[in-house]
Length: 339
Length: 296
Image 1 (tube, each protein chain N blue to C red):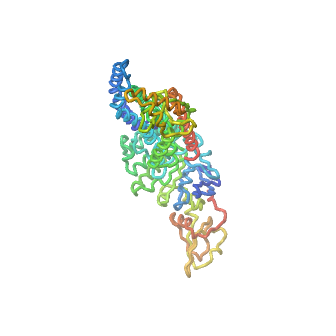
Image 2: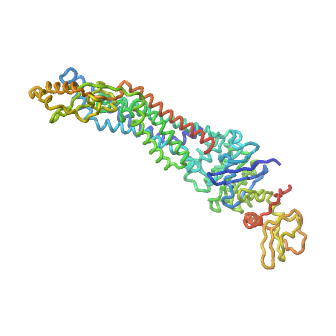
Image 3: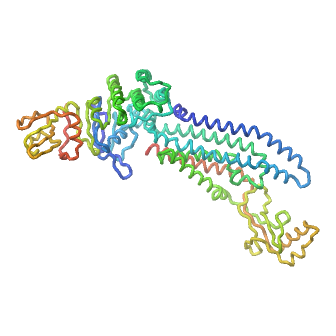
């Protein structure tokens, strides 16, 4: 049975191995250069006035398309595996009638299915594992410089690093197999698998991941660090004030002393006049911040600290693996009773 | 006489529709059994149930003394050639033999190779590029090399041209002569059945209309032609299968074990096709008397 499964799966497996080899080779080729540039840049800017913020921004900027491209490829991988390996696994055999040949050999149908799903499922997880390993290694200097614009917990970076891609791939594969079994035709099964997997992948970071743990609530006062600028007539523009640079900010709002959300802080003209110090913008800023604090304005934010990264990775991987197991269990039952 | 397939109240339901219902069937071992009937009679469903590919919705079926596909031993006892004889298009002929060898404990590799050789199939050729006839022969070779006790063929030649059909049937007949096995073959072509089978089952609307040794069935069915009369006036030993009347003349197809002595009839033998058609004909009077099993 292992022989037959391998014989059928050989083509797709070799193709995936080829694609992954090219992908990994490209990353291996560019990765060390990227890491060197980063190390040199950091060494040059450390201790200088203004710190490394400008270098980090420039570094990310110059590699942004590669950063997003590589991440995007890995984002697609699990879906593609579900599509091309999962959906046709049983559906194609139903379509061509070879299912009837397979199930009338002297092999129990549960064993037939077990070997198929175990072998191809394992290959799925290995492929995704190699992919994420390569990308996580390659992108680590970029991830460090992208801490504030692409926090590690947020959609694209979170989904394409660490161990979650393995969970995604296992789920996509099991989903494809199950859908194929129910739909009995490979092409419609592939379409349905893609749509369903995309839905889950959109719903997960929007509705589930934020609730994997209780978000941290933080209330911050104003300082020169979190004020973007002062507009005409004393309007204060503020940005989220969370001390943790890599935090995943779920919400950030400004409230007045009664706890009402305000869009902008409208300081009285009299207070603004007191702060007017054209020659010393920093001092003026500080004065405006103090005034806002005195009037009871606060910045409230909810967020997940960056330290929760691995906890979230494991939890989310666990959820996807559990879904994959559930689907596999169902398809086993279906194989036994209904196929 | 041992039984190779036994069905009791067997039924299979797809959603709302019964494909097979209340089927009672007992097929003897060691015969080449032709299963004929109109489309939709449930032939294919019955054979898929016997091969264990489908599970019954009601009733039970036993194959070679046990439930079909219950375990590896049961699976090994039954060879199956599915409708349209599917094969793995991307696998070569040799791959198919390897598949059979690895998935069947009783696989007879020498016979399989010898047969492929004799058929002139190139072992390296992909099954997807074989002609319909060659594909059917490959499927049959695989089912035979498994050394089953029972070989089930579900309309194996339906989509083949006459020459390929003849070659396929020839291969089947040779195998039956060499190996000791029971064969159940469904077909809607009476000529296939006539050439290959020695036992006939006519299935209409899930019901066995007639079952018996082919020669005996032919010998015990007669066409009677005579002056118009009511079929009910016939002796009790003569079962009327079909009756047609013109103004003056009555033509009957009767089944009887006894010689027809009534001189007012002109008695003719019938061929298999007439017999099958008579049983398949819906307009035939539905005589609800117990089916007569042919005595052997």
